[in-house]
Length: 221
Image (cartoon, rainbow, N blue to C red; front, side):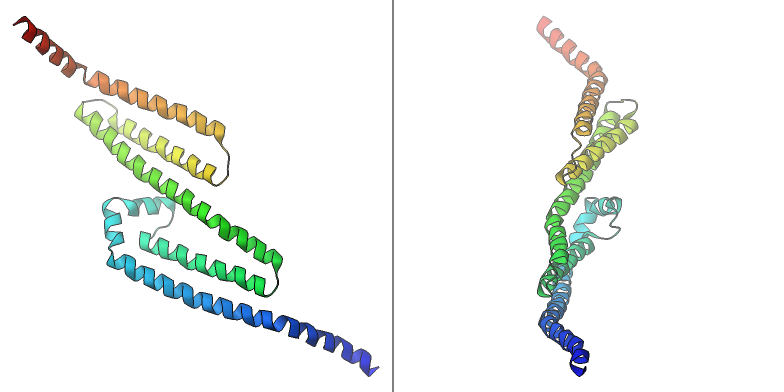
């Protein structure tokens, strides 16, 4: 009778002894990871602050881009945030392996492997925003210099089309196939470029006419 009562406790103690090393190892891994993540974040914050990354980023409009992407913070904060959580996730994977949780380990490992793709997609969108802003300013200045009406509309349309195009490229990089939409957008972008070229040409036709008349008069003389 006593043996029957003690067997469950013995089994529980045996399982605890089997799990204890893994639990202790997982705890140490997470503790070490937390210390390492915080130290690395502090080091990066100091290095990026000394390099005046935020100051340079503000001059070229990166702060505005980060706000549009939904970060709402400086580039230094965003980079340190991503590095901090990347280190922690790597430690979570190691801790799940230590306590023999293959399902959790697999899910976390897949997410960690997905992070570089996500970062690349964010960089694509980031570059698209910068290029859209630059090209929209070029279109607006060219339209104003040639007295072309609707320059503001052309500038906004250029910005919107490039932004959507960059978004689709980012989605495709993440494995979301949108070939038909991308092809349609490429056609729209080409049409917009052709329209701008025609508008620019029509706006400059008077200058071209005067230049040709001057050449003809010189030849006659």
